[in-house]
Length: 113
Image (cartoon, rainbow, N blue to C red; front, side, top):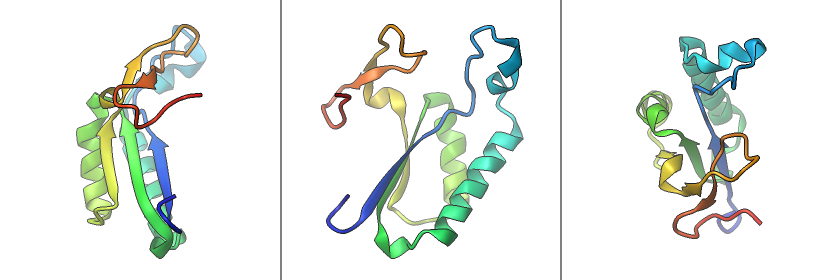
């Protein structure tokens, strides 16, 4: 929270590895539906969450998704409290058993305890 404001972090991956699981093949394909889902989520959040209570809204995603996520965000809002950053900028290393998601941070801004 920033003072009496609430901040949100939305981890986002529009394309994931299925790790050979034939039942989740759809997760490895970045389709227009994924982008539409993000757009609808943001529109709903803007309409349903009282914006005067918002501190910041940070979308954290892999580098390959930053450009498209930023374009969608720009279409939905020009509010500077909303931003997109690449996860590689903050995450250091992949730990065994982390299912491919790297844990740890480069600048100490975030940490996993």
